[in-house]
Picture 1 (cartoon, rainbow, N blue to C red):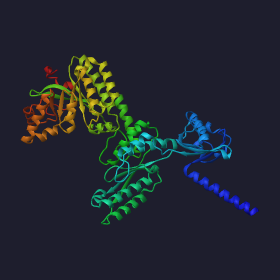
Picture 2 (picture 1 turned 120 degrees about the vertical axis):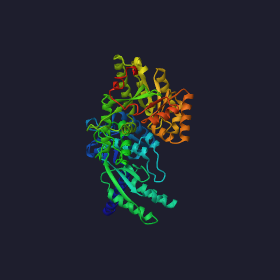
Picture 3 (picture 1 turned 30 degrees about the horizontal axis):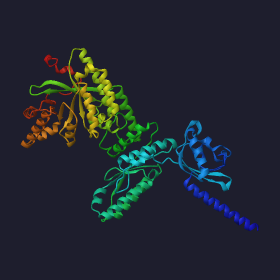
Picture 4 (picture 1 turned 180 degrees about the vertical axis):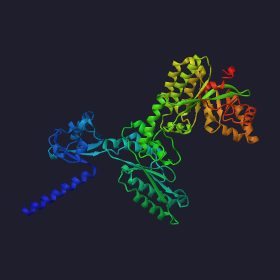
Length: 560
């Protein structure tokens, strides 16, 4: 009899352990609650979730551990579970020591009246779950199943925010499969699809949550992962896989670069912009180098160094800590100065000029160009006022990015600024620049119309360099267009090109838009654009950008 009891006891214990093990497949912490929601049993990782060891939980009211905002929800769900028998998966957070909140926790449970009207609850840390808006916006590379560049940046941002709450460290690896693209092109479709899927599976399996890897180009792949992932082993496995799939048995060489991706104090909004820029910068870091202090060379932590540059850039912009220079635009054919274009100048920590093109690209990619544009308006309206007080009437054109015209906060701030400085608006012009395409043309056109109502003339920069410019000209009311110097040089090489340029100028004149020729550096170019009907010209032939605008009329007072 004793043997039977002992055997039965062992069997029951094994069965209990088996069910407990199965429960831990889903949950990190298992709890049994009595009918009053007090904890009678706890097993698992309670320290990280509830901030107490399992043996300290017995007799404690379960709902007292919840963050206050989740207590009504969980209490109601438990009451519902008493009726329905189960509690569906919900996400909650717990209050820990020092008023810190736990990471997001998924909670599921059952109510079993046959076992003393007790609740059985499983909790699982849900740091890898994505918000519905992020999950719904994800786009993938069809061939590999990996995230595309923007989707990867969104998911990485979410993982980095979660990492703050858990203290987990992550690294980001850029993996290049050299000569992978030509290999794929010479493979049969079926074999190529299998290879692409295999490469995608390798990277996803080693990434955070099994889905924080992306395809960043034909041969470039990125992956956020734990520090203990053996990147060297992964490289070798991918090389073997590709070599086996290559009809010639050659394969590819896989090279990797690893950087830290952490986010210690970066606000989520800035983090999202910084991650996307960092990923892009990481892909072409050998060829691109915008920096104020830390973005040159191989940064140890690319996200944090990007954020440092964002902070530095924002500080300099908001405090107007940059220089401006002025380049004349002259009326043809007599070359009398009509107005000046204002150009911004930033310098790095060593005093070297940062190329303006790199500066604007950085500002646009981290969504900060509107702050620069607003700062330039502030600075130049103040400068115009000081010139008027000195008896100098001079018009200046301030560059505004097309991105800023799609930003309602910028446009409302600009309108408020104009309203406070009405006496200076007769001397202010705006040049709309397009380093990247304006997506919402209708919104941009409405704001331009508001600016023009205040007496501000508008110039469309780089006209004729793309099909989108004609859409802008048709949708926006502007006063001038500026044609890029390289486009002029190419057109003027042939009779057909010259005829095209004359037709373009005539088209603008028909709709009462005047035309500026840019980068005019020789008398021959001046003569060509004058014959083509250009109204204005800009370039070194007429004057370089100067910080002191009075250099242009110290000996020519009639030009005032």
